[in-house]
Image (cartoon, rainbow, N blue to C red; front, side, top):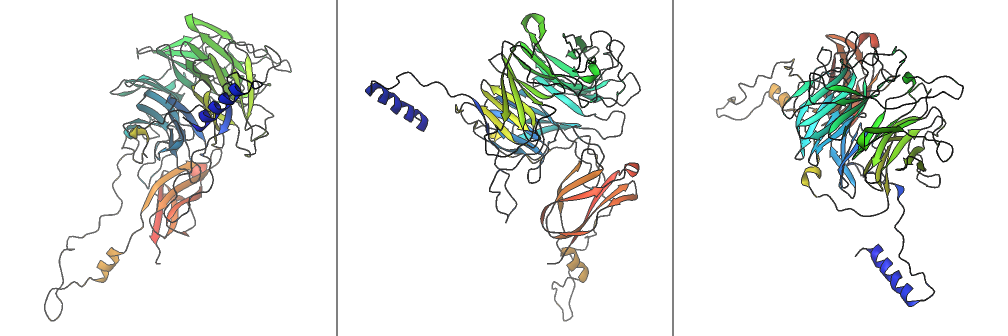
Amino acid sequence: MTLRQTALAALALLAAAVPSAVTSAPAAAEATWRLEQPAPPDPPGGVPPAPFPVPLGAVGEIAFARPNRGVLVTGGNGPVEKGLYAYDGVAWHQFATVCGGADGRLAWAGTDELWVVADQRPGQSSTITLPLEDRSLCRIAGGKVVSSFATPQGRPDSYQPVNGAACLAVGDCWFGGELLPSPPPYGAFHLRWDGSAMTAVPSAAVPVNDDPAHAVDDLVTYQGGYVESVTFGAADPQNPAAPDVDGSPVYLHLLGSDLSAPFTPLPIPVTLGRSPRGAAIRPTDLDGFRLSADGDTLWAASGANLAGRAGVVVVRLLPGGLSEQLDLNAGGSSPFPFGTRVTDIAAEPGTGAAWIAYVTPDAPADTAQVARIGADGVVSEVDQVPAPVDPIGPKGTAAKIACAAASDCWLATSRGWLFHLTDGTPKPRDTDPAFAGLITVRPPDGGVPFQPPVDPPIDDSLANQQRAERGGGDVDDPSPTRRRSRRAKVRVSGVHTELVRGTTILLVRFRLSAKARVSVVARQRRKVVARSKPRRLAKGRHTVRLKLNPRRWPTGLAINATPVKK
C-alpha cells in the first residue's frame, strides 16, 4: 500500500468514528500539467553533474506505443546530444545519441519496433553535404538501430525532407515529405517500406483542380489505412505561387498499397470565412493540417501559416465516413484569435476528446498554450503551461503534444521542456532491456559513401626489426622517427554539424581525446572557402562556429587537430 493509500484509509476510519465527519469517498484527483524534465545526461569524466534540469532543445515529435513506453526525438541543446529519449512509465532517460533531429518524426511499427526520421549524417568525418535535416531514416528494434536509410544529396534520387511517418505493421510503413526538385507538375516525396525494400513513390499523380501536388505536412494511420495532409501556403517553399482554388480543395489524401496509384483525395468540409477586416481567407493562407487518430475518429487541425491571415480550423472525421467542421465559437467566444498558429494536435484515447497546442499572435514568448476539445466538439478547457502562479520560470511556447491514455498527455515546449498532464495515478515501470540502454551506433547507409584516406598509411614494415648497438647484442634503441610515431595522437570523434536556421552560420560539434590546437576548414572541392581561427582546446566536447558564404558553399569539411604538449 502506498503512502497516499494509507493516508486515505486512515481518513476513512476517522470519518466512521466521528459522526460529524464527511463519510463520502474522496473524488479522484484532477489531472493537471506538471513539469517533468528528464535528468541531464552524464557529464564527461572529472566534470560534476548539473545540479538542475536542462532543456532538451527542439523536440520533433513524441510518440507512445503504450502508456509506459514512449519516445521523443530531439535536435539537442548544449550538453544534450542530438538523439532520442525514452519514457518507461516513471521517468524519461537518454535512449540514443544517434538518429536525432530538431524536426524528426516517429512511427511505431509495433510495441517493439520504431522508425525515426532523422537528420542525415555527414559523409566521412572530413566531408559534409548540406542540407541534411530530416533526410534519413532509422529502424530501431531489440535495443539497437537495425537498419539505416539515406542517399547522397545533390542527385536526382536524393531523399527530400520527410515531414510525416506512420506504420500499420512491422512491414507496412509510409513516409511523406517536401516537393521534389523537378519541373512542374511538382510531386511530393514519398517512401514506402514493405518489410524488405524501401521504394520512392512520388505523388505527382494527385492534381487538385489543376493545381499541382503539394508538400506533405503530416501522416497518420486511420481505420486500417493511411491519411496524409498537404500544405498550400508559405510552408510549401518550392511552390510559392500556388493559385487560388476555385472549387473545394483537397487537404487530405488516402494512401493505398497499390503503388501504381496509391493516392486518393479525401474531401473534408472546410469553410474558411473572412478575416476581421472582411477579406476572404484563401487555402494558401492556411497552414497544413496536423492529424491525430483514436479508433474511428480522426482529428485534423490547422491555423494561420507564417503570413498570419487565417483562423483556427478543426475538422473531425467520424465512423461511417461522416465528417464535420467544429464551431469553435460554440458556448461563447473562441479562445483562438485570428492569426493563431496550430503547432500540434493529440487525440486523448478513450475519451473522444483531443488536445491542441497553439500559439496566439499576442502570446508571451514563454507561455505554452493548450486547449481541450471535448467529445461534444466544444472547447472545454484552455490552459497556460506553466500556469501564471507556477514559480518555475518561462519555458517556451507550445510545440509538440501527445497523449498515451485518458488524462495522460505530454507537452514539449519550443525550448525543450516537458510537461505531463496527469492525475498522479502511478504506472508500472517498463523493464524491457531493449528500451533501457543507450544506443550509440548507427549502421552504414547509402548516404555515407566510403572515401579512401587522402594520406598514405605509415610504412611500418620494418617496425619489428631491431638495431644492433656497438659492443654487440640486440637491444631496443628507437630512432627519433620511431619516437615521433609513438607520440599520442588526437582523436576527433562525435562530429555533428548544424546550420543555424535563417543564417549561414555552421555549428561544428566534436569531441577531442586530448588537448589540441584545432582549426575547422571548409572547402569547395579543393579550394578553401572558410576557415576558423586556430584555437587551443582542452580534452572533451567543443563547438566551433564557421561563417559560410552562400556563393561559395562548401562541399567538404575538415577538422585539423594538432596535439599540444602538456
